[in-house]
Image (cartoon, one colour):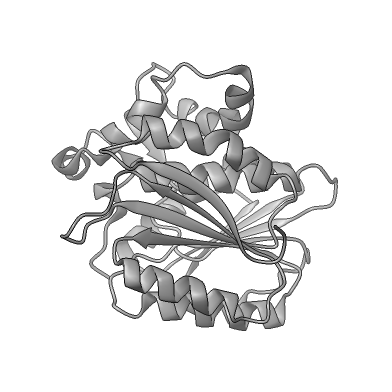
Amino acid sequence: MNYRHIYHAGNFADVLKHVVLTRIVEYMKRKDKAFRVIDTHAGTGLYDLSSEEAQKTGEWLHGIGRLVEEELSTEQQKLLEPYLSAVEVLNPEGGIRHYPGSPRIVRHLLRNQDRLSAIELHPVDVETLRQHFAGDFQARIIELDGWLALGAHVPPKEKRGLVLIDPPFEKPNEFDRLVNGLARAHKRWAGGTYVLWYPIKDLAAVKAFREKLRNLDIARVADVSLMIRRPGPEPKLDGTGMIVVNPPFTLEVEMNALLPLLSRVLALGPGAAGKFEWLVGEE
């Protein structure tokens, strides 16, 4: 309950997370049928990068701050436009002062028939989230432990959509909670797309996490990872990853087009690299 994303909003991990998220949402919009996005750890939805907290770490300067200054190819611009437009609409005077969290990015992209369920447990953050979405009939704000949502809120009535699981990793067993939560939700809704964020800090823990995912009875599991430097002797956040269950068939090609760009632009040292890997299923 002590974690506050404002310190990390817009950093390299947010960039990868939100790029992957927007590509999946855009794919779902190819069909007219409505879908729902369930965000289990929604946060406040909007972050002021000029705040004391954000300025204290300055992490966004090496994340979204770098990406918006980059000259993009036509293909890169097309793939990143849904993400960058969600940032730009909050900063009409140029620059970056405000950064959208996952619920704001998703809401920016939804069509009239689509819905968002944004779940947050922190009592202050959930009230802020409610204020941001006041009067919005397409967004449902729920005060609840996000882990419980994996049982209580799947499948959605639309029977189509994605679940974003983005825990704060405050507790040492978060990797196990991700695996167990995914397994529980998948049994209830095998046809849904699940997107799980994880930090690459403890390499042994990440290896064990990936192996446990391989051993689940799930047919298609992809891993999109980004390293911003080569891991050193002291554990620190050297990379980030996104597990995608039932990914769109387009995601591999799109990530392979974007990961070289992201690893170059967001690098903080030698050894930066991005990778799309199938843990289970397609090769």
